[in-house]
Length: 296
Ligand code: R5P
Image (tube, rainbow, N blue to C red; front, side, top):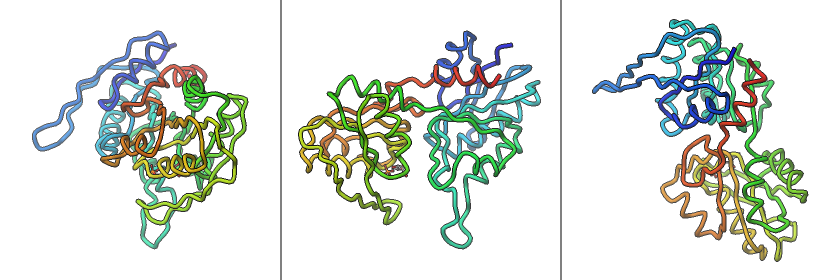
């Protein structure tokens, strides 16, 4: 039996895209805010497996709260299993305690979603750096699943480039850089990144010769844009030809994030639509729907 697809308020277009790829119609419950900020949701009666779609940007805390209220309500309304499709899963960068007393926020988030009744989470290119998917899974009884937008991103950016070399900004991006290079039949390299503070990073210049070459930079998240900006600057200094950057989640949190990438010398920017932004031309709805067919 096909699942019922229910949209959260953060990304109705994603719910629509997933539902269309599954051959069903999404439902769009009314989500309002009272004047004091409280959320008010009215959801339809449902049954069987419900796919609840909510991305976590902008306003990750608001979106998380709405998801908890909505999933709890959907369970009351008849859902037996709720698969939360969270294309951009926030809080995954807070996966460890660096100083005494610091919250491991991703664990707290998973506990909250578990308490609300989420059975599965399906996300896209989860920011798994220090931890693997098994480590995150060990924090919760929720089953975690992941799909990747990298093939589609590489294909899209590849149309613009001639035999590009693929570059990942740091060792953590290697899994995506390798995948993109395999798809494009090219080679890849990862740079050395050191984060000095949440807003300050240092990128060691690359040893690979990019002179006259087209380059595709691949990363999972562009937040302030500083990481990609520094990579572009270093590639420009190395004499690269065309430079494209493809990333799954365009958080673009700095005021100047998008403009800064062009100013640094980017020729082409593309992201997936896990978060809507001016670069989100790759629709992950069909990729998510493909995985859902396996899960249901
Ligand atoms: C880091 O580990 C991630 O893969 C991204 O490189 C990082 O989150 C990007 O952040 P920003 O755009 O703020 O430099």
